[in-house]
Length: 496
Image 1 (cartoon, rainbow, N blue to C red):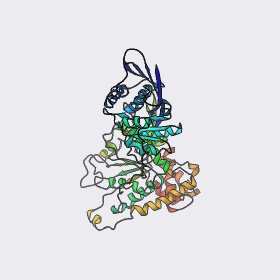
Image 2 (cartoon, one colour; image 1 turned 45 degrees about the vertical axis):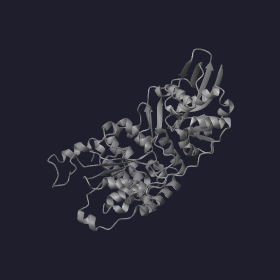
Image 3 (cartoon, rainbow, N blue to C red; image 1 turned 135 degrees about the vertical axis):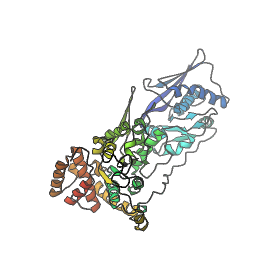
Image 4 (cartoon, rainbow, N blue to C red; image 1 turned 120 degrees about the horizontal axis):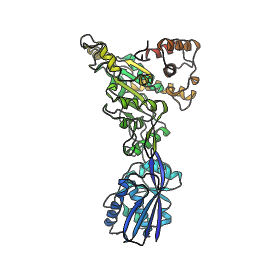
């Protein structure tokens, strides 16, 4: 009887859980068994390993081959167990040195010709291997992705033969080339938008404090254009934020091998389901709100989204994470995003336009807005009516400030926030962290009483006012800042 073991990983959300791939070859009837709660993809590794060995002119020994994925009570999912199983079998056949193999973790999918195909989760696996003092064996195309985890030994092999020759000393696998940060596409410029001063101001305030924004206006008013220009006003991601974003995209299979420096911008279609938004499915994949982590989630035509999909945003907006509950486990993904939404004032889109308004006004607008619950509207910091610009004004109006100019003001205001409460934007700051003049607090309290604001609405009002003060470079929030914040506060139907 011979035995070999190699480390691999199972993924629980963005966490890489250590899995020991134990291979035992013993006398008995020829069999190839995989135990330890494997799913269908893991169980099919038998045939891929057998075909890869055949492509190398190797055959499995006519004995009983038992592969145990420990711990046995943890569900194993995915094809990335192909490579560690194959390496474990080769070590048990004494074709690979067990002592050297024990210094590495491995993951990768095997093609029938022995090539090693890319898999999801290489970056979190590399970080876990680095934390355990191990090297990593991964597909050649993902070597640079693994390199972002730190200074660890990486064997990025194109196929199984290369790995076999490397460990036997017949060839040397070169370290993967270091990755280079992704070149971001050119962002749309805010200068392209003419007029709409109120909407532009709301966009700047939202960018300053990371506030959630609702744009209401008729079709063609420019709501989507405004939302698309918000990422250009935001500062670059910090190294930690870029790493968090890269880990989520690595698990989702959308990571391109190079961390992005700019905040992500996600705009799912309004037919997206609740699972597509918050995460889920058979393998509990991250949803749109997690893919927008540290960035912007734009929901165009908000009332057209399924109500359940909209309501799934309520908890992540408050907590910055989402939990996918399954019978076997609870998977948690980060979901700290900035929500930007757009909607028409009614179903036909022309409520308030005397020439186009339907006969059901104003009831059509009330029914359309009722598709969004009060608790959801209460979580939106800024609401602005986007009026359409007349064609003659669109042709003759001068260009407004560019994104670069506004982004510079936002960066200065963000620096003030960081000095006041490091690592926390105004949208998540505590009231005690927001300096405010007495007359400004009095106005906020009177307005909250008159508008019947909830405790959450009152807190968000103060946070928006603080962002307005930061943009002005004023140390303490003043009455005029609260007044401007009140102008952007959405009135929930049923309240005065």
